[in-house]
Length: 116
Image (cartoon, one colour):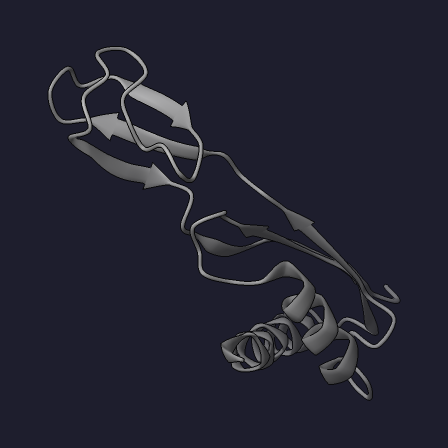
């Protein structure tokens, strides 16, 4: 369950940002988790609910967005939005594609509450 260690790293980053900004608490955390990231959404949500206890993010809402899978064709150079089980160029039908987006795990937004 590598989601637990990913969530630990995420919360460490969030706590560091909250401290740098003198935040009293974290209201929400928004993540982009690509379909090909190898991360189970439910496991991240469960790990987050356990690890956030006794942190500045204890009441934070975790928002998970799923960006599309985008490939770029080596043959025609076009980009296509595709499904996880079909990484073929939609323009020329070539299977010679490179992944542009879809395997990321990114902290997109952090909403902090500060007193001042």
